[in-house]
Image (cartoon, one colour):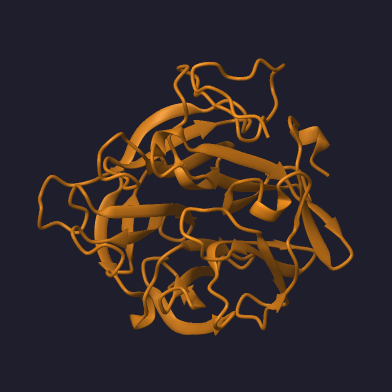
Length: 321
């Protein structure tokens, strides 16, 4: 695959997606929202991600969680930092903490926007293994930090959130030093785990989880644990969020499918107003220069009992099925 210089985005007709190439916001600056998740609310998409900066510490989101907004998924406006880190060295979000994979849900009952993220406390490396919770009255923030903890008393690293049709929300997170995926139902206000939880994929070392529902079934995509190096994507299906989950094969198809197109999953987005249209979102991590990390967005297609993620150099939503 081609690698493009950050200063020279690929010249293509708008609007379309160009996976793995520079993606500028409406101000002409590269989008800085790594390990992200999307929220659709009142006709607008919001993209939350790790805001990376050039510091010797490398892969840490030193500034906080960024937010971008779009009405069409192609053009994104920078809404600023939705959740900043703290200058208080004793704060859970002290500058220098590791804050990864933010996901935001809207709770219709409370009217609040609730953010969950993987948090490692300052100076503890990857040993804290917590989730962090922040809340806002607005999708663009500012989000107010509430607390951090280990959900259901267990380690939590790479995570995602999933909301079912009945508004029940679930946390999927890599636990037990990444050996096993834990699935927890959230409380009705989405601010804690309810105590109802289970384990999936024991001993499989799954991370980078993303979950979606299609055709009355639940679908999972994730990766193995190979540090910052990409590996083959993994997939699974279940009849209920708690499983049991049946592991499938690598859903990626095309050049570099064995490394998930040199990327790693972060989220699957159901596109509003387009039934059966889902976008696979992934990151190309560059730990030596985290700002340079690119985004890989691709369509998901469905076959009998499987889904696939086909590589496309350029594409638009009309080609997504």
